[in-house]
Image 1 (cartoon, rainbow, N blue to C red):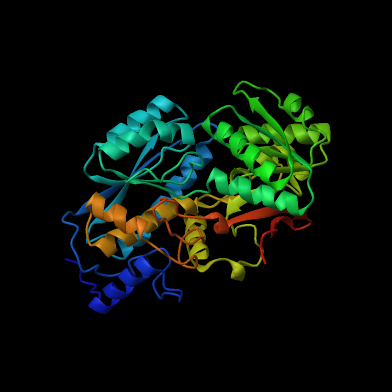
Image 2 (cartoon, rainbow, N blue to C red):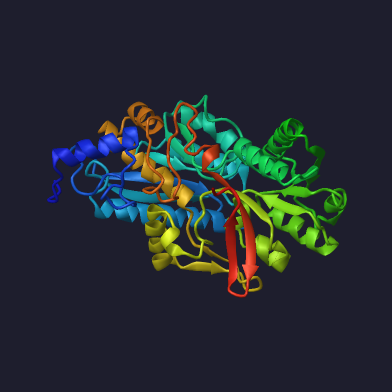
Length: 412
């Protein structure tokens, strides 16, 4: 029994906030959705495990480590406030090393472990699509901060905390149309995500009156992407992979002197490899992403919840710095922290760990952007999508004598 009590008034206020999305600012720390103190209900256990499946090693190791760091910060904040229903949280990590077999095996393991109440991952669309049925069959709540393709609407226990490919395409095509762009090409891996972007761009460009030049499908063993970029030298824009291969495309665009706009998803901002490969030529590149305040120089303008979370991440884990480009990223991923933030809010609102009750409570959340770790509002609804198209920005990446920063081209 914890000694720090919370009154029934606070419980009611937090439940109302979680379920109705009060527009006012809460006095509770942004890293602690329960408001801190005794939650007024018992989880019936002393500990809860939170699972993470991701690439902790290899070319995308920075992604998995960032997810791990943000989840650890979130866990520590919740534990300091009393945990979830009196239970302390523990992080359990599995490295899939970009191996789909390992990803599915880890999902099977964690889905079948009753002590694991929430699983984050496996990262990447193809890996998740192979694992999602296991989660559904085992009634395992799961949240995905690195899966942009596919639909979550038919899932009962799965939720997404990343930008959707549909929203990314609609946002970038709308912006390019506003700039009188006449044509765009796609260079992407020939996987489920690449094929989804290809189909979405065909439709969106047709609706916007922009010529779509088609897709150049890359291969894992490509040493250079110059051949792909050469096909699109006369286009106004090239949309490139959100993953590590996008850095090869960016480098090829520099090598060939491509004059149009290079655009990608949030991976461009989160992966220093893009900037290490292309250098100063990334100046002017477009990144389509949920709120990302790290490159906003006025820290007072950062979303309060984001600022709280990132300060904790940097204090504990530090910052990544590209030795050639000077680009920096925090060693954390707030979109992953949103998964646990939403889970904690939902369990407190439902006053239960029952997966059916928690899944329904997550879907009903409406949490304001100023409180979440990512700085984006969380409102999953029936689609089970944390964020909507209105949360997605088109950022222009820029560099001056003080370093890299972003200009939000979608801000009013």
